[in-house]
Image 1: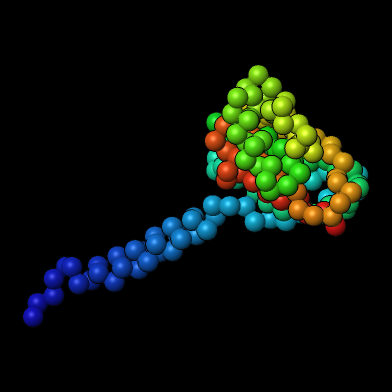
Image 2: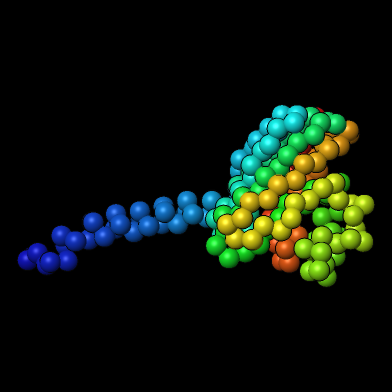
Length: 163
Ligand SMILES: [Cu+2]
């Protein structure tokens, strides 16, 4: 049986397919940040965005109860504003995020829900950096942080772990 030109190219193209599939898999796994940082008392930790994704690159900040820390947000997105808003507990995420939808005049910080909020940065435009100094709660526990720009809070989250 004569060889066809096709025979010689089949193996390389199969290998290419495998490489492309492997590449896609890696991209999907990259959807959320996974970094954890420790914020020493009085120090600054830097949280970025994962490029243009609705995600922080740091999703866990560890801090000492009762200390004071500064969080710097570096917005690496090309087109979206982001902020960082620390809330008291998991059940505060939805009320704050939903009330923020109506709070465009106060940079999406809902003034009627401030008792749920520990601290917050200004809204950082694309390429901007903002920061906030917060008093870490005295009570050890897990305190969520979210972005309150409309549509972001359900996925753009991290956790402050207080010990
Ligand atoms: Cu955001």
